[in-house]
Image 1: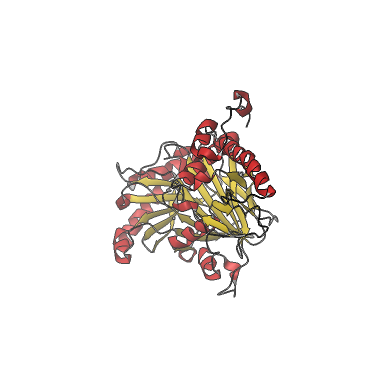
Image 2 (image 1 turned 60 degrees about the vertical axis):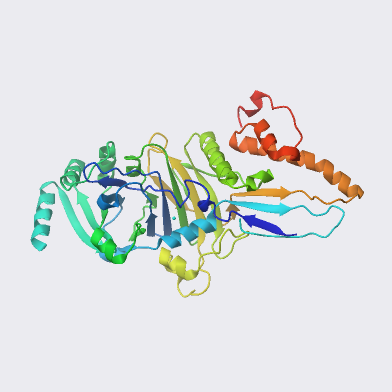
Length: 437
């Protein structure tokens, strides 16, 4: 039997996927009135023991000229622990793990042979003065580096008010609501990683976009700070976490981690341009609401050495090493032993008052958000099996329509209308049947 995969990377088709998303786990700051806006982010976490490599890829809306970002980090970082990564690696990881639409074609019921088709469906003096001014505010510039197109400072502070004053004196705009969050991080003895674009270096390098920042550190804390990222958000944000671990999937310990509905048979018209992305956004939004906006969703969990079906090729050992999979060792040219968990969370301050805290589990069960289209056989067979097949199609199409309505909350009559003659007309379910779904 042949299978057809298409829309291989949902990232290319849905609005808040990697190609267009743009938030961070810290907060954006900008001089004067520069308008920066963030909605979502992609973070790759490589974790084994207390060792973490974090890659932060972001898109943002605003003038890059005055861009800067502040991110709390659990420990001091030396120059060698900071790197500028390759966005293409994050894009590849996104494509590999993206929710997918799978297409099957029914066999001729009069022919017992089966066909299987498949198609695969982002100056020393001045420095001393700056350090002296910072010290007077209780802020210590522990280190400063230029890494790629970024100028980076590692700051520690005694009081949040001193840090905020220092940031403002240096031209950064602090989002309202950030003060108590900054204070809480200081109580945890965390440092602040401040990165801004060095336009001269960026021009030399020739990049027209911001490349991901990577940091490597050791800390027992396996967490992702998201609270500062909410300080300058105009609404809920979408965050995608790609965790690469040695043993099994990860989950959050302070919020529920749930799997998205998967393996659903849905109407074939979702193959039409734009339909699948519209479906996925509606379906995800509905699942968020059903979980009281307080859950983290697993979209993919799989051993990186293989996939079935593959929405994109698995990452090579070299690509994984560049993302920070430090245990890949000598597997150059082959696949590294890494287990990928893709988490998707839509968060705001009302429903996610704490940072995300993770744990690695021993669970290596495979999971993917996968949705199935089944094309009916359209031949002219007249055998008894063909007659029985035709009768089952009506029920199947009815179930497909009802499942789509249940997943998205869309009007069933409208779905049936779009399906055309594929589904028998029927009454709209009683209003109470959708109350608690």
